[in-house]
Image (cartoon, rainbow, N blue to C red; front, side):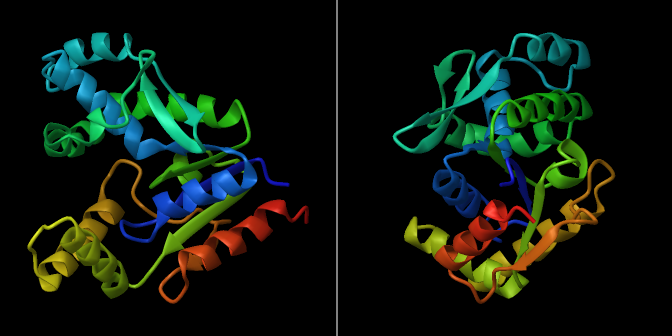
Length: 221
């Protein structure tokens, strides 16, 4: 039984959904690293802290505590003891989370926090540099991917369901641009770990992916 599992991959590959369902199926803690970056961004905004001020940022990080708790079968993030899963999805957070996530001090802070959380219990941790940087000694490292056209189609469908009017070609362009940025960034670029299990989800349903990974997780070999 693999107790420390990581799932990495590009945007739109299904990481979050698969990680959540796999953790639930295994009765493991699901650690959403993206939510952690959002929580820090939310804190900085609410406190009126200029994240471009390195000293102010350093002092702010020292006051931040993040943890996850399973509530009604879902992993919920808490910021300084208060549930914040809805607050971190606000538009103001969406607008600032990307630059905050690029700050080295923030990444180093969360690297340690993510590692401590993941190693404290059986867990499934999802992100973009978990198997390569955060938890390189994980029992099972998974890299989920899918063809750009498939990932764009999934994203376009999600946006349409939310009432957002955008063309498929624009979404595809965004996906390809995001892939380029993630894979070429200097700090923790997106890439599979050398020993990662590569899984292309292009022609698989979510259920098929989860069941396949579940078997890999419970396999003692």
